[in-house]
Structures are given as C-alpha cells and as structure tokens.
Image 1: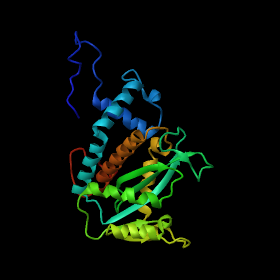
Image 2 (image 1 turned 180 degrees about the vertical axis):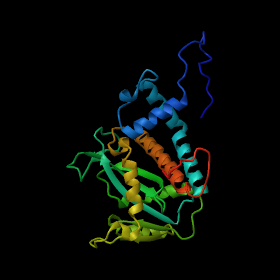
Image 3 (image 1 turned 90 degrees about the vertical axis):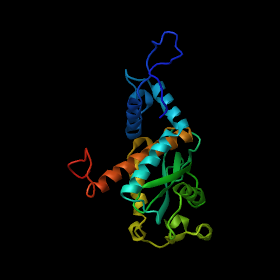
Image 4 (image 1 turned 135 degrees about the horizontal axis):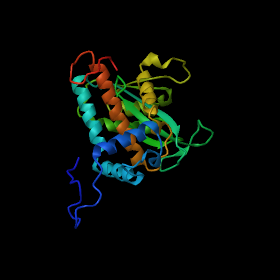
Length: 261
C-alpha cells in the first residue's frame, strides 16, 4: 500500500476531514463481496458509498487485489503446495441483471443477461485465475486464454494433465493442448459418467465456493475490471481459508483455532 498522510499536506489549514483508514475500507469491501448488497446499503456514518467506490477503484488501479492474491498463493504454495501437475478448467454461468461490458443473453436462463467465467484451479481446487465472457460464449474457445494464465506461475511440472468436461471434447481442444505440451483427460460426449470419475469435482466445488459470495453469484457490476477485482479478492479469501484448514493439522501458530475450521 502506498504511504499516505492522514491529512492532505497541501491543505492551507491542515484540518480537513482525515482519510479513512485502509482497514475500515477493506472490511467494507469484504462485506460487499460476501453479502452482495449495494454500496449505499453498506455505507454508514464512518464512510460514504462514494468513498468506498473511490478506494476500490484506487486499489484496483494500483494492483492491490492482484498482489493480495499473489501473496496468498505464495503462502499456500510454501506451506501446503499447489498441485500444478493437475489442472482443471471449466465454465460457470451466473446471473448479471445489471448488464455491463461482459453480460450477454444466457442460454440457460430464458435469454436473461448472464456472465460466464472460464475458471482454472489446481488439483485441490485452489483458484488460479479466470476469463470473463458473455453467457452465450461456448467453453472451448475460452480454453486457450484461460491456459495462458499459467504463465504467471513460472516453470510448471514436466507432466501436466488438464481435466475437462464433455464441452471441450473436440479435435481443436486436443490440438491446443498438444501444442502446449499438456496431457489431457476429457470426458466424451454422450457418455454418462459422474464428475467424480475424472477428478473434475474439485473445480465444481470451487465454483460453489465462489458462488457463496453473493456479489459473484448475482453480478450487478457493469465494468469487467471491477467484476474481476472482486473475483480476485474472493480467490485470495478462498486460498487463505484453505491454507488455514489444511495447515491446522500440521502447523502451530499464534491465534491458531482450537478446532479445525
């Protein structure tokens, strides 16, 4: 976070309203993410809706949300370990009543506006990234830009398997994975099988984790960079929560919960 004085040093009297602390603003953004309410509903005598929007935009421009997720993933990888030799990609459609840059007519919701996210997780289900698109986009064309996000994780293991559902069952998908040197495990169209059979249930669980944040399950944001910022914040929360749960049996630290969370 950039260093800032409590009051603007350029003010002639130095007595204007002081800047609201970052801790308070971060708590407000977490409440927005979890409850999905409007900025006006979460504002109070401490800070206004305009202040919350302004701080959110400032942090987004500075890359604070992306840096927070990076720190969370680094801590998880150091203590538990990311399972990067097993990658899962899948799409999920959610409602987008507010419209916006990426909202399109949803084929599964009577033509109402919807948002699709092409998400990617590791072998346990830790979210690694996503691509936002309209609800009318098919999953397979979004695979390549989604896999491009793996470049942010440095050298990958020698053998990486990408697990996909039947929506990706095509020669173009297999060719794309072969060109990247990735192995594939793709469900076949017309063959009934539970998602647990190919270990794709991890990303289905991750989608459920993300949809537990009401601002993501029913998206009213209009700008894609703002929507993605809240997704990144949710990814950081999921990574930290999974870290605490999985490290509870192997590590000890100050403030460790008495029960496994």
